Length: 385
Image (cartoon, rainbow, N blue to C red):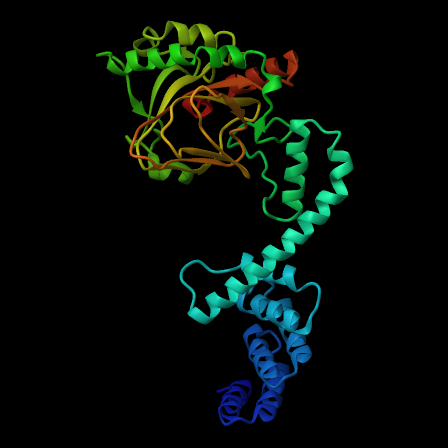
């Protein structure tokens, strides 16, 4: 055994015998020998806390965290010591500790401490929320609904109830575009016409579903060797299927011939024209009790529109920090290069019309250049939906 190990072993015996002062002295000596051992410093902190010297214990914890800043046990001890000492930064320390909580079931004592810490953080955040709302109230009274939503998200980010999500396309990132999860309806003058046609589009979906030659295929299909882990669970799965009307710029005649009204409406929706990539439009079918895992799309120069057609109770869709429930006939547009996921928790099928559109802020010359670049890369199906 090393000298430090011998000192620790003797310290354990002394602590077990009730001689905490001797145990602390031995652990301090061991820590001087093993200067890069955060666990040893935590043992020292534990003895110092048990000896009724929380300030010294806090110093030892800080030395441990300097070596391993995200250690859950050290963060938890720091939070409890700060609380014991009445320091105002204690609630934030609890938040840092809770953020590093390991997965799985915790021992009862630890779980109780975490539960108390969560209550502490909740009260702290509530107080901060009230303070922020009061500070922002005058400005917020002059804001419209859209701006109020952004101000609410600003407060939520400050309180770390939500975080910033960024556009992370797998292939094509056009710079300088606003990172926004769901985009305002006012930017899309055709959206009300789309929604007005919901019943007609739903009826055409039923027609294509019963047609003998309709093509219903897995939504995700790629060779197993490709490095696309975000899709692995649903690759070639029948739990998430699609009836394509337009796919990578081509009309899928077997399905499209049953949906003339749907295609007429789509013709007014500013879809990209990119050879081998766009436009795309499909009926997306999500089986009962099926989750679509978090993932990102290919190209941030376009947005994706959802028009819900069949929506059982409880079906939801998350983009970044915002979660929405699909509602029949209520369309929305989002940036699919920001992390998003979905769930159908019901025992019924969920159906949504999905298609791509240009980002409305792109100038004609930008659209021309983006289309040319994507065509030059000829990514095929990878650029579609």
